Image (cartoon, rainbow, N blue to C red):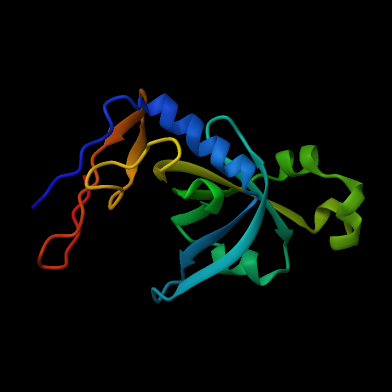
Length: 177
């Protein structure tokens, strides 16, 4: 089994900043979860805000299929591509419905156009990530073997820590630590 190395020059804070920057430059991604039967639900989403800690905020109608599909989903993934940089970032975490922050971010223009009942129909979903996977060839974040595995950081009690991703073995299984 070949183990991939985390780039020695990339600190977790650098990787976090690159992930945040990638998300801020590219406002669309795919939000993926699964229902109780394990069937996938994937939705194209436009995120509204990306915080410095990589928390991503989405808005949707409380009556939408998007909100219904992710309601109660314990874990989701959100993948964002930056084609120009030949890069991507995937955030893994839990969704939180934050009504107080929803009211802070509410904007009548263009909000009323999509949510005629105002902010009471507007659900703000926050993805609070605990794991980030990232490849960015322009920033030279493409661990050996040549970008076949991402750079990975995970949130711990003390902050973001690097993790090693391993590529698939000859038997077709993947091990990540």
